[in-house]
Length: 246
Image (cartoon, rainbow, N blue to C red; front, side, top):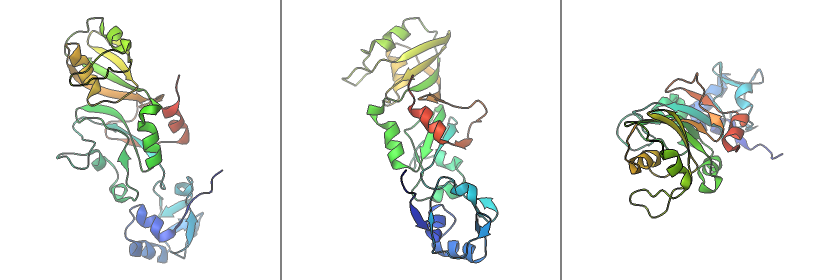
């Protein structure tokens, strides 16, 4: 088992967005930082940053925010952008205010475009992020697709063939699985993530995607009770589901 990293208490609190190191030192001096039921006295003491720290430490009577190395799921609403730079509402505005000040920063694991809703993962763990988005991982992602025109019945076969070319590209798509749900709706599961891929796949067959919603990554499903804009911290078991293949 690898040894947990250690960090000075004032640096830990500052990195989690509780304020500057001086402000963190003031919190400690006032007895407002409590670990295992006892107020901490030295802001320069080093603590083991373990996953259970947010269960053992309280700041001003509230449980410590998740320590570095965590991941969350967000039910992204439409109209929100996965970017730091674009104009309009950003997914980062859906996070608690303090979380936007964390170091390392929280980033999206891949993207959903502005008009796509559903399951979006976010993390401050760069190694985890790259492990998920690596093309070699081939982590499946499932989308609920609503089309403008009725499905014609040949789409599943075309997508599964592995020879469909998108406009402007010279490499065929990997095979994708499609399950028809209704005359205008289907589940489409991909193991790659090209730019606006689902929309372009249906456009290549003469149809238009009216609505697009991601409901699964790997074998991790978007919970039915997670409302648009809401988030949930991922457990180790949840992360195992992201990488589980069937």
